Length: 446
Image (cartoon, rainbow, N blue to C red; front, top):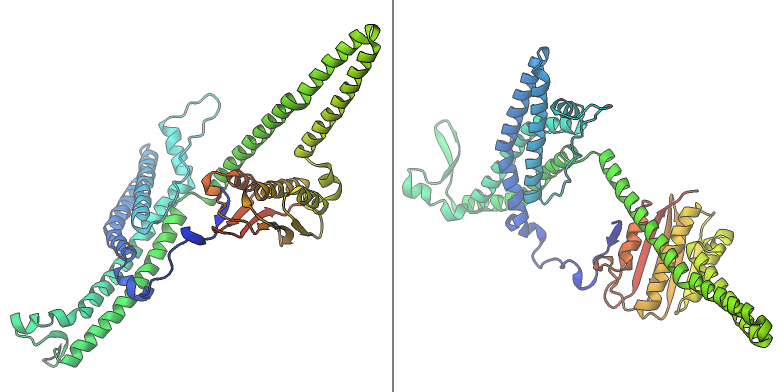
């Protein structure tokens, strides 16, 4: 769903603690999870690297025989399975949500049925499979570097920071007065004086404050590799998004058709049926009681007017004539005039966008103004429309009670889905107590 929310009010994120983030970092669960991720990366990367190198070398070497292709297929399938494990590990320790890549789909021709050979062929042709192989090869040297750097910094930082608590081990259980830093010409330098012990502790604390950010930087590279190489390709994501948007458009069109059919059946059609019956009765009474027939025709004339008005309202709900003839400015002003609270309308567009975008913008504002009338308790409202580069911006605001939330399953959720179907976005800012400001973005199409 193409919806964004701004954190305000009771549901907002908690404000910063009295303790600065830099001082809390070494003790945060996130840092320890990321450190554990880096520690596990080395053995996992070693396994994946050895598997990828061994199976690819074996498969390429056997290409001169019939067995090369199946071995390559097994190698790629194994790399994809290891990639699934890596996504799960990143999801658990790094809190990184990476969607599964597109599945392997064997392409059949004519009446040929898909089988093992078609599946292996699809594996080999799949760019996703080879991206998993690339990850297996490049992650190993990076895992070595990240493992050594993070472990060295983390252990050294904690050892130095708590050195005043354990330096006594050396003179008590060894023949050294303290931890030996280096030795030159048979003479060693030991950390045993109060100044040296305190300086070591200070250095350890500084390292302890810096190391979490180093770990975070190292895991940022892992995040990029996992999301870029083990997730779905941009093309696949776009295809899935378009498929989802197509489903939303189809469902919306079907719902609109059902609404139109219901309005016709329950409104104008029922009224026209009753009108036909009244005219039939008037025709029968025309010879016997002309005055009664005239009264019935007069009543039928009133019914015709009502039926015509219902048909006009229905047509206006499908696509208002004022929007087609005069554009967004006058049509939105007409909408605002029907709102139960005073609404100021400002439209600043250099030219008219595509009719489809105009229609979506019109019905978006219409639904938001209905929400103001029914739910907001507002005294005033405002509608602003302008163009920002290649986007049409709509903002509907009011001074009501606030608390609007599309996640609660309200009409805003369906509105956000309709906007998302055309690459639009709905931004909801509605803290409890108000005011409410809802911004919609639509692509500019001429």
